[in-house]
Amino acid sequence: MLDYLLRDAQAGFSVITGASVGALNAAILAQGRDIGEVRSTYLPELEELWNNIRGSSDLLGRAWARGRLSSVFGLLLNAPCTLEPLQNLLEERLSIRRLRESCVELAIEVACLDTGRIATIQPSDPNFTRFLLAGCRMPMFFPPAEIPAYLLPDGCCESAGLSVNARRDLVGLPFPSRASLERRLTNEVLYGPLDQQERKDLAERLWQSAERVPDLQWCDAYVRRILPLTPALKRRPDRVVAVHALPTTLAQTDSQDYRGFVPRMQRATGILCREISRTNSTTARILNQVLERWRSVEREVDDDAPVRETQAWRDMADFLSKYHCAEAIIEISPEPGELHSDPLEFSPDVIKKLERHGRQRAEETMG
Image 1 (cartoon, one colour):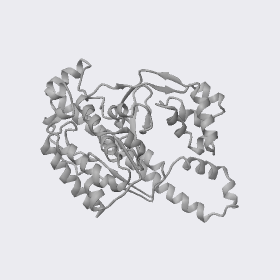
Image 2: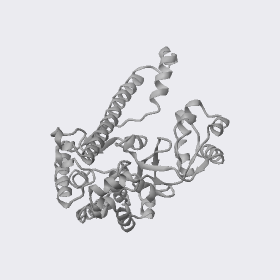
Image 3: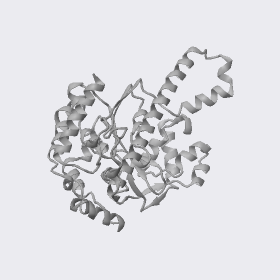
Image 4: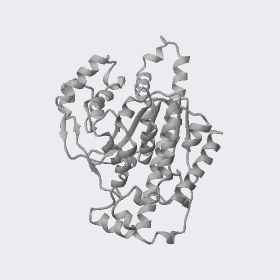
């Protein structure tokens, strides 16, 4: 899909987001200083990475590399698969310095098992690589990554004079760094129209009361959200192209395939992932349509019209101002089929088939 979008369709982007394996692909591409270098250097590097994969053991360690039965026993003994091979691969191919200097903005999403909240991580945050690997840890197969972060107690948010909605937004949300807290405070609806210095001062005041939690547990964001549209839409883009790694629907199969523990677990995980993905996508599209119509209504109603003073109008304006929309959300997803049934299979044949199928789907969608 990506080769067609970047080469054939000549699609450019200023923001790239990702979750799970999509975060890895996004991080490799985002090292380019501009879209030209992304096409000329980092797209070929990403293709080389995947073309050199000889099997699952190139990315996954221990139990999975020894077979599914070992994985099951490892799962039961709390010592399942590891990501040591993938970590070694990233150390060779990923430069945090290049990511921080890039003109392409990168944001990845990970889930905190302790708080149940989604956190958006950027290369400026400490431990970015650890969070990137944590985002590949599917809880069904991998142990969570323990990475320290900071939590804000409700008392400090209340003493700072924040509204109830602002406190709900902050309390329980893990912050890997002070910079991530400051980025959160850019939401004018919740925190007011702060200038840069006021935002820094508020972030500093809150950060002084932040409590460091050394053993917060992090995993793949799919437990809450698969399609990372939120960090992209916050940048108010003109167009969003959402690339699904897996089909949003499952092909029907013979039920006798699921008599074993591992096939049942994989099938159940697949159903859950696709349902979460479909819900994310549908919600984003509905909100996008509502926002478009609301903007149209605002343009047609005079600024001094009495309706603007009603509580219903103010409530609707406040609610919708929390969200952002794009002129178009284009989704590219594979067709359902058994080709995509095993999310942890990385054989060369499967990778090449997925690449060909993805390119075909991108061409059909983008036209």
